[in-house]
Image (cartoon, rainbow, N blue to C red):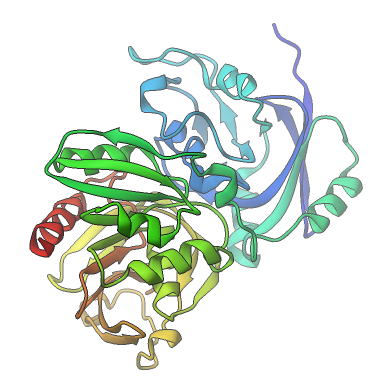
Amino acid sequence: MEKRIKAIIALEDGYFDEGYACGAEGETAGELIFNTSMTGYQEVFTDPSYAGQIVIMTYPQIGNYGINYEDEESDGPKTAGVVVRELSDYPSNWRSEDSLRNYLKKHGIVAIEGVDTRELVRRIRDKGAMNAVISTVDLNPKNLVEKARNFPKMEGLDLVAEVTTDKPYLFSSEGDFKVAVLDGGVKRSILELLARENLIVEVLPAKTPAEEILANGYDGFFISNGPGDPAALDYMIETTRKILGKIPVFGICLGHQIIALASGLRTEKMKFGHHGSNQPVKNLKTGRIEIASENHGFAVSRKSLKLKPFKYIPGEASKIRSEIGTTEFGDVELTFMNLNDGTIEGFSFLEIPCFCVQFHPEASPGPHDTRYLFSEFRKMIEGGR
C-alpha cells in the first residue's frame, strides 16, 4: 500500500484542517471556492475559468468514474488546487483511461483529501470567498495561515493572461459565417457548439485589438469565459467597446461581464459566487425556469444599470419581471435572473446586435436547457448580413 503523505489546508481566517495528499506534493495558494456538482469534476478542473482558485468539491466522493482525455475542456487542469472529502482509487467506467489521483499528480496539481469539506463550505458561505493554502511541505498551521493572508486577493487580478492562447488558431474551418472568438480562457465545449451551428470558428488571443478583428471581415464576435477580475482586463474591454454595434456580439460568463464593462456598467465581487451545474435561472422573456451551469465570482451591478431598487424575496420567482436598463450603447433588456439570489444572469441590447449571459449554456457535462442560445447567435449573424 502506498504511503499516505500528510497535508494541511489553512484559511486566511485562521482555520485549518489536516488531511492527506491526493495529488502532487508541494504547496499552493489561491481563492478558496466550492462547486456543488455531483459529476463533471474533470470538466471543472480543466475549465480555465478556475485558474487561481482552489476548488472544494462538495459531493463526498470524487473520482469514482476516473478520467478520460476526450472530455477535457482545455489542455489540462487549470485549478490552483483541489479539496475533496474522499478521492476514489477504483474508478468504474468503460471510458476511464486513468485515475483522478494519477491525473492530478501527472499535472502537478496539489490536492488534499480527508478534511471536513462541509465545515470549509460553511465558512465560505458565512464569511465569503477567502484565500487558502494547501501544503505537504510546510506543516505549520500558523505559517500557512499567514501565507494565505498575504496571498493576493482576486479583486484586481488579471488571470486571463495565464490561460489565453498565444497565437490565433482555426478551430473549425467549415461553415457559412466566420466568427472571431476572443479567448479569455475558452472551454472546448463552447467552441464545439459554435462549430455545430455551421460557423467557421477562429480563436484569437485576448489582447487582439479591435482594428485587427474588424479588418478581417468576421461576421460575428464571441467573448469567452475566463478567470479573474473582469474590471482588470482593460484590453478586452477596449476591444469590445470598439466592436459593439459593428458586428453581432455574444458573450458568456466573463464575456458577459466584459460586455457590461465595455458599455459603461460596473461589476462587483460576490460573497461566494455561483459554482455548480444546478443553478436555477428564470428566462424573463418566457417566464420559463431553466437549469444552468455556472462558475463566477463577479456579477454585473444592478445599480450601474440604473434599475429601480430591488429586494429579492426567495420563493417569489413569479413576481420577477424583465426590466429595461440604460448603457452607453442604448437601453438593454434583462433576459435572465438567478432565482437563488436575484443576480443578473443575462441581458440583450435593444438597438445593436448583442446579447450575453452569465451562466454556461454549453454546460458539458450538465444541463442542456439553454443551448438554444448558440442558435440565437447564428440567427443574429444571419440578420446582420
